[in-house]
Length: 403
Image 1 (cartoon, rainbow, N blue to C red):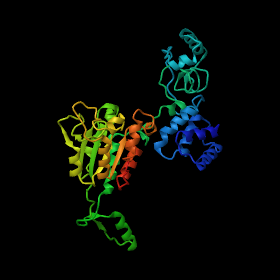
Image 2 (tube, rainbow, N blue to C red; image 1 turned 60 degrees about the horizontal axis):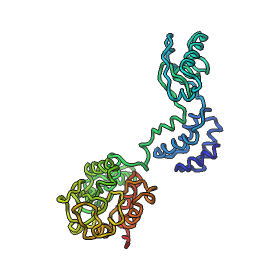
Image 3 (cartoon, rainbow, N blue to C red; image 1 turned 180 degrees about the vertical axis):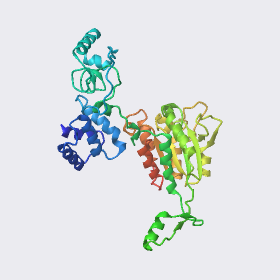
Image 4 (cartoon, helix red, strand yellow; image 1 turned 135 degrees about the vertical axis):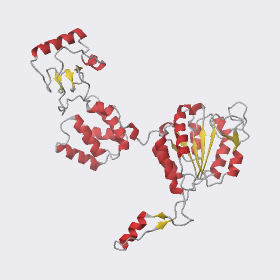
């Protein structure tokens, strides 16, 4: 059983090593699992999961593997107040109906009345009397999988239900981003700035500590030139059409970029589906509000870091043909793919961020154009990990494809 669970974790992308697995087995032999599925859940997560980014994957794997297991857990530490002496109102849930589908409401009430008539006092724990905790089908704060709650609130979920709640989705690094996560990732561009000129007015803490240690504790301050804010960014964003489902995500990126103070210069332009002879000033892509792409190539120096955001999904003709643009009143004198190649050749520090999950790039309607564009630009998916990789690629020039 545990061997199959090991492979389930692997299949869900959790990098469990054999050393960690052996540690888990040793911990179980020592009784550290507490003899319950919930204890086993927490023990596994503590030993096998290296980062909170994998908590959600672990919950999915655990809930999948143990979905059919029902086990009563230990008694709660806090004992709740006894039920009112009058017959409380029953709360009938869908889970109760599934577990007691052979009984109607009248029959359930009759069973409860008989149980109360036999019972002569409060009861906490156990599996028969009406009370709190335990595995009795009547009461509250207990652990019966299909119990009927009388008073109180539902308190104790099984380990499988806890895993199924997926409370750690926001910790995933392969999920799409929020404004704060965008800002954190973009902040790493600061490391691309230089310390070449100017007075040494900034304290170098690490060098100061090293020098002081070398001097046997006698303080020696080391000063450094402040890092020059020299990063220039050109952000090109696809807007409308197939990008509508990702509009909120793109708005978050736009907000994060505008809030960033790490750039010497920031320019933002828009396009629809593909870049042609023009780039628009707003996401509406109006025909009378644009800058010629040729002008941008001649005006902005090649040291701009270019980030292109788009799903790269379009009809092949939109990418490869003169006049392939589908917008009314527009006509491109160059195929879109030619413009993309020219941009890549001029701005060698450039990347393409795709909001579509990478697993679907070969299966979507735009798979052909996605593959063609990824041959021109380094393409990453728009997730935390993807943006991290993209930022790394913006730190150095890369060979430009000749296709």
